[in-house]
Image (cartoon, rainbow, N blue to C red; front, side, top):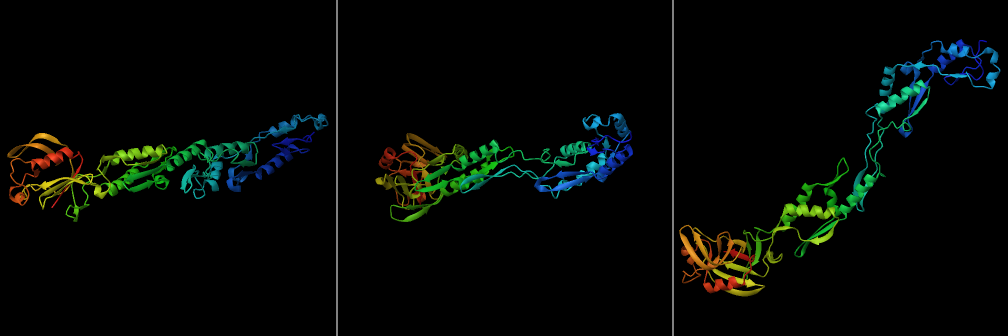
Length: 427
């Protein structure tokens, strides 16, 4: 009459044969020893105890009602039926205390938190490899609180944070197709091999340098550090550009001199070559090429001058014209008046050829038959008004900077010279 059926359970606690008062006491005792075990990554555990959160029953007579639903005269049938044998008694806890307890846990201590990290990429002597992701141990506060809140009310005693997907995981893993695709793209770029040729000199660009230019941004897009690519091309320019640089030149007289200045030579177009280089790498090319030039010379050998050139020795007032190594013409000339119109020294290139031109300048107008400019308004031409050439004429009665020459010499040069041919002027 006063005791629960055998097999009776309240909140999964066996109250068989107990009175209502005894059942309430047992439930209170069990509740006071309640512990929620939190299973963490790495085999660690953390416990939340009833006393931490103010856990208690909110009994309002339901245990007595449960007992009253069990007909005392049918106790024998209870052995064969589970009807009226189980109930759940409501429990309550202090939500503020639960939050405080959770936030005091080791996994919310900033010193213990390991942030999740996506996979990264590392360049090795065998190409790019994937550096695995870091799972870390950062917990999603909302997911954990909501799950634990519900679990306590259900009298559950274990919460596996991994199982409830409570951890903040990296966006990608080493096996993600996105990561594999990025690795393959990096290796495609790094396997490029560009061999630059500068005459007999070569510069080989391969993955050992290219990998330093590649970046993977937060969205896992592969980008180029264009500044570093441009620096590389600029270094090529510094090493191999020859415009205006001093050149070693062996004169007809057999002397080896240095000639400075002028506009003749090689000059790499840094902007266009940077763009072309990035394109070649993106296509994974293995090629041998010359860089994109903004200006070219006739040769990479013999100071770029090669074996076709005009040599003007302004100290001796004499000119020689060589074509493919053969002396085509030579003769005395008159260069710029040394006092105020001296012909500049340097290596220049012939800009163009023109017949029957009229040269104009301050205080003069001179028609010539063969006009061959090589330094702005300075050029080679015939000078029919002169009766003699060579000697010291240039010191007192020189030209305005041009190289005056007899008409036969000018004609021979004009008929045989090509635009772009170097003109070497020196004293």
